[in-house]
Structure formats: C-alpha cells, structure tokens
Image (tube, rainbow over all chains, first blue to last red; front, top):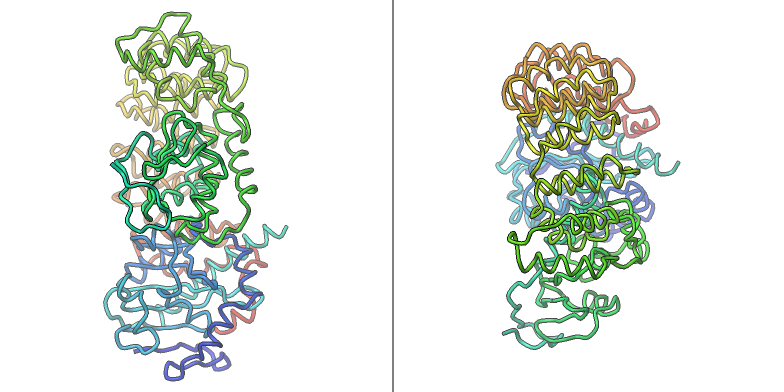
Length: 192
Length: 427
C-alpha cells in the first residue's frame, strides 16, 4: 500500500495509481539547477557528515526503525551523507544506484512518500532495494532548499510492514528541516 | 604460476599475494597522515581506493622499478603504464615491492580514485588527476616527511640503506652502536625513511632503551614541531626505556614535559602516575592537558583521583581533556560530577567532551541534566551541533524526553540556512 502525504492542499498531487511518465521522472532527476545545487553541497560520492549521521540516529531511535537516511539524489544514484543502521556495501559506500532508490520518487514527485509494505506497492514493488537491502516499509520527506529545489529525502526504513503515523512524518519533517539547514549552511559557507 | 597477461581475457588467475598489498599501504598512509585524516575527504578517498582492488581480473605487481600484470612484465613502472592499466582494465589486486616509495603509492592512489575503471561512485572523475595529486602532495608535505613532496625522491643515504639491510638480515641479533644510532636518528629527523619505516623501527627497537635515551636528547634539542613529532613517533615505536622519560618531566621547557607526559601515557607506564599527577599543578595548561590525557591512559587509582580534580581545572582545554579521559575509562566516573558538568559548564569545547563522556557511559543516569542542557541550547545562542548531539543522547536514553526538542532543531541554525517559507508552509 502506498500513500503520498500532502499536508496542505496546494501541494502538487501525484498518485500511485497515476505513475509519473518516465520522461518526466528523468527530466526532474536531471534538472541542471538541481544538480548544481547538489554539487555545491559537496556531500555526494561517499562523503559523510557527523551531524547528519546524528540526525539519522535520532530518527532511528525515535521511530524505532533499523535504518534512517539523509539521502541526496542526483542523476547517478543516491548518496547518504547521513545514515544510521545501513550496513553492507551501500553503507560502506554511502550510496546506491538509482535502481535501489525509493528516495528518487520523493524527489521527482516533490512530496512525502509512505510505503507500508513495498511488496504491495506498484511504485516500488520491483525496486532492487527490496531484494538487496531488505526494504519493506518506507517513509520519506523531501529535503528542499531555499530555492525550492528538492535535493533528496530524509527517510526511515523498516524491514517489516509498518503503518506510519502522522507523528512519524512530523518527526521526519522536523529532522529534514534540520538536515537541510545544515546542508544549506555548508553550501552558503562554500559560496562565501 | 600465473597465466600470461592478455588484456581482453576474462579468465586470468591472479598470482599469490606478494610483498606489499596496496590496501595495507593505504592503511599505512592513513597512519602517516595527521590524526584527522581518516575522517577527512582524503581519508575517505584512501578507504574507498581499497574497494576496487577486490574486483576485476588483473593482478599488478610493482617491483624493481618495473610493473608486472599476472606475471608478465609490462615494462618500466611509469605514470603512463599505471594510467593505461587502470583506465583500460579492471584490476583485481595491486601489490608493491618493498622499494615502493610513499610518493609512488600516493601517485597510484591519485590514479585509482580518478580512474574510470573504479567501480564506485567516484567512477566519474570530478576533478583532474593533477588537481588530486596536488592535494595529495600538499597533504603529504603536511605529514611527517617534509622533504618528500609530490615530486621529490627518497633521500635515504646508501650508508643507511646498508645499515637497514644488515638489520633486515640479522634481525634482533644485530646490535646498534652509538654512531649507527646517531645516523639512524638523523634519518628520522630528515624524514627520509618513511618508505623503510619497518626496517627503521626494527633497528631502533634493537637499540632499545639506548635509542630512547638518544632520541629523547634529540627531542629536547629539537627546534621545530615537525622534528619533535617525528622523534616522538620514533620513541613510541621503540616501546622500551621509558624510565628515561620520567626524568624529562622536570625539564624547564614546556614542550619537552608535554611530549614526555604524552609518551608515558601512550606507553602505559603506570609507575609514572604519581609524577604525572604532580604535573596537574604545572603552570602551563598544555602540560596539564597532556598529563590529564596520559593519566586517562594509565587508569591507576592515583590517576583516577587526579582526574576527578582535573575536571575542575581553570582552563577549558584541561577540563575537556579530563572529560575525554573519563570517556575512555570503564569505571570510577562519578554521576554527580558528570551531572554537575552538564548543568554548569559554559565552555563549548568542554560541553562537547562532556557529551562524549555521557555517550560512553549510557549506564549513568544523567537524563535530567541532558534535558536541561538541550533546553539551554534551544533558548541560547545558535549551536546546532551540540543541541543535536544532546538530543541524540536523549533519544537513545529517554525517547519521549527527546521528542519535543526535535521541533526546535532547525531553529538552532542561522535564519538564512533554514528552509524557505515555501518549504515551511506545508508542514
């Protein structure tokens, strides 16, 4: 079961039953301005940031989930400058290809994504993260910068089906705001 | 025996692992660099550079200035050779013979992390080899060997090479006389022996306490920080003759006392605890800090008593060192002291050390102090890192107490870093 969460009615609506056209999905992932903002963060390609790891650990502890991630999504894959509980090569390399990414849908739809059980979701049923990373339940909210570009997602992952609550998403959004503030602050320092 | 090297082939059996594994070399490079290297971008490069060596089909061996692939000689070991191999083939394992210099390893590393064949997210180079090499070179200069820049060559003299060869063949049976020791110590100072650090370490260890005494004299007379650091590391490698260091604790120069104290701590010389406790009254805070750290390593009853006093030192760096020392000590930490520290400490560096200490002792109940700490951070000046650290600790110990603070986390950054009004509107 997949729900998109739209806390306010004026947010753009995308439904699981109406998947994004692949061309639209790709165009949003490869938006040059968004990619430039991602590059400016200097947080791609395996870079880890302690403060973002801490935010991920807070999410993991408070939501009682095994994995929480600060995920930045570019046109090559997703990068985890903040992570908690992710082992294996994805954890070591702090990233995966897009084939293993639920977060890309948060980026291209520009809204929160909640998956109670990936096995029953048309959107992510075939995603390799299910097989290789054991992702069953997923809740992710956008990481959006001051220019309104969605750079990635702050997400919580469970290995068993889970009914996410409104409080869970509120917590994720609060932590996402903190993560985005840190990412923006780094980019601002770099611009200076 | 390995199969001949045929680049397009998919069925090549790698040879048995020879001399120096590149992964080990990377680890050694990390050690050579300053303490923060493993957490730095360059440290990440080094660690990631080890990954591609686990993939692919070709095994490279660098020896006697030449390079071999699966047993087949490919010619002189040049940058061009490496570049062609690393960009055109998938390499399984790279080994260097003992004559490989640190410079060469760094050069190879630079190639590896910019190589299109690297099966990691770095496979798309974000900057040129020249840029990366410049960065590696700059870092290298900052490390122990000042004379070995990106384009410099090893300066080991033939006499020292002969001496080291003798030690390599004779092992511990070979004794070092005073002249030889001086020669080796000079080499330590010039930093020319990094690529032969194992042989040097063996030679100095064979000299034992005598070498420590000589190096200590050099340490006292050293004129630069890098010299002191080099000698410090050489003494540490010997692991003998530390009793000489206790006498150095009374030296008039603060840096000699500081280095001796640190060496005594790292060497675990428990008999030095009383002498180190005396240093907590030293007028120089740098000496007191080194003494506190050393006492934390020793963990003797006298050391623990002294550490209880050290958390009240007037200088923040000493208090921070004391709390970090407590973080590494398994027993004897006073709950009330930690609680009082979290309640009253104003110095940011000490606060961080207090949180490190609290994190290392989850059994100690300081939750109320942590709540007050986080509340203070929410209302006081912007300090997101400490607030997040405090909330993290609370989330692990008392989740319902951490929850209210999560709403305030983003507010601890400067206003211009927080999310845009448009982004905030829908939450």
